[in-house]
Structure formats: C-alpha cells, structure tokens
Image 1 (cartoon, helix red, strand yellow):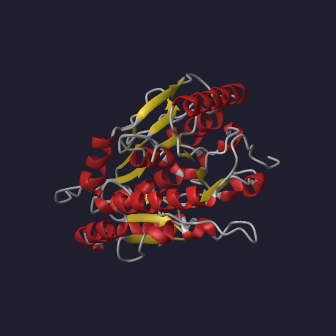
Image 2 (cartoon, rainbow, N blue to C red; image 1 turned 90 degrees about the vertical axis):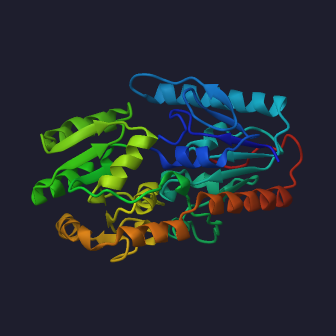
Length: 346
C-alpha cells in the first residue's frame, strides 16, 4: 500500500513542529510513503518538497503555496503508484486533485474552521481525532474517530521535577499564552514559554502586545525548541499549563506531558477533558483563578501514574494500526472512476 501524505503547505512537518497535524503526519508517514510538505520537513518517507516561504504569510502567498501543492500532487500521482491520498492541512479542499484514487482528510482543527462544503465532498472520506470533535459535526454527518498518539519510546527515565511552570506550542491568540503567564505572575513562580511565533500578522501582533510585556527574569521565552529540548523541559516542569481559548480537538502537549510524568492544568476546552483525567493526571479548570489554584496542587499528582496512563492510552502504534484499518476501509468503499472530480461548493 503506497500512501501519499499531504501536509499543510506553509509549515514543515516533523517531530519538532509546534503543529499537531504536522507531528501526526510525521508519525504516520513511514518508509515507502510519499510526502508532500514544505522544505525542511523531517519524514521517514520520500519527501516531495514544496517551497518554504519566508517573511509574513499573506493571502497571496497562501494561494501561491496551494497552487504549488496541487501541482506537486498531480506530479506525484503521475510518477508513483499511489493507492490513497491522505490530507492533513486545514486548506486541503484548495488542492484536491481530479482523480479516482481514494482520498482521506484528517480534520485536525475545530470543524467550524473548515468550509461547510467539505461535508458534501463525494470522494473524500473525513475523519476526526476525538469524540468531542466528532460530536460537533453537522446533523446527519457521522465521522470516524482515530485518537492521536505519540512516540512513547522517546519518554524514558524518572522525571526530575523543578518548580517552574511550562507552556508549549505555537504562540497565537487562541492558545492563551498570556493567561498562562498571568497565572505564573499570580503564583510568583518561574515559567518557560516555548514554541514558535509563525509569520502571520495576527500571531506576531499577539506576541508583541500580549505576551512579551509579561516576560521578565522569572518568566522567560525560550523560542522554538527541538524534540530533545521539549522532552527535557516536560520532564522537569512542575506542571504544564494549557489555557486554550479554542475548542481543542486533541492535545499532543497534554499527552507528551503525561508521558514525561508531568501533570497538566488545562481549561475545559474541546477535547482536553478527554485527555487530562481530572485529579489523576492533572486538573481541568474553568477560569484563570482556578488554574492558579490547581497549579498550586500539581505536586499531588503522581508522576508514575501519569506515565502508566500515557502508556495505556497514547501509543502511536495503536494510532497507526487504526489508520491502516481506515485506509483499507476507504479503499474498499470508494470505487470511483478515473478522472472523477470532487463535488462540492466550497
């Protein structure tokens, strides 16, 4: 089975990516797969690289990237014996090829972030990454769910806890970085903020106006980090704060924290209560004040229990097996003639 995995055009895929979709693609695209992704991506399969754009990402750059992506997809279909195309990008509908090859699109983000027309596509199967996300589908739309997983083999050894709080991810308004920093100030605890500021105007403005003013000698911005640095920080943190303001469809950070033996204090946003077991592997908070109170109690959570629950629930091998089974079902159910174009009004 040869899978063509297609990433979001503007961000490289790999284990160090701050985007969950890019990390999941890295875990799924094994040897023998073909991957279309931005230059700089780290994948086990054969990479068909598209240009990496520098500077501010505008609508014009986004449209250009989508055009290049579609051209690379057409070239890959002509060159390789592709059995199925697996899309991971929010904008996958902008570069769907005219083909009879079965297609699957994993919806990594809140469903209302996608155009409604994707639910009428005739030859693209959609899947979700959590039960909470799937429950928000339009009436009459039943989407399969495959929960995300992580590479548990990277997380070994006893946690070495310190007193600092940790926030990890891409720095943007919906992730609530400023709330995490306000909690750290409220508790007078040190904090490390780690992750990229992607070159979108809204993200850069958010960092400059809301995040940077809250940084000081005790609350530091570490910038983007690699996989080894992330694991080190997770293993040493008192707890990880996830004050997300968006309806999270999953949370690889919460899974990774558990695998590192570190509790998570998260807002009750989207699927986070599916991942963080309240009182066992962390706490679910309904306000910044409650988040601060739970962060004070983080030491009550057993690091060993976090490790046990991560191994039981978040194994990437389980996720891979479920996707392979879904690939088989998609290929068996979609018998479309060659040249059949996707049908929808997007």
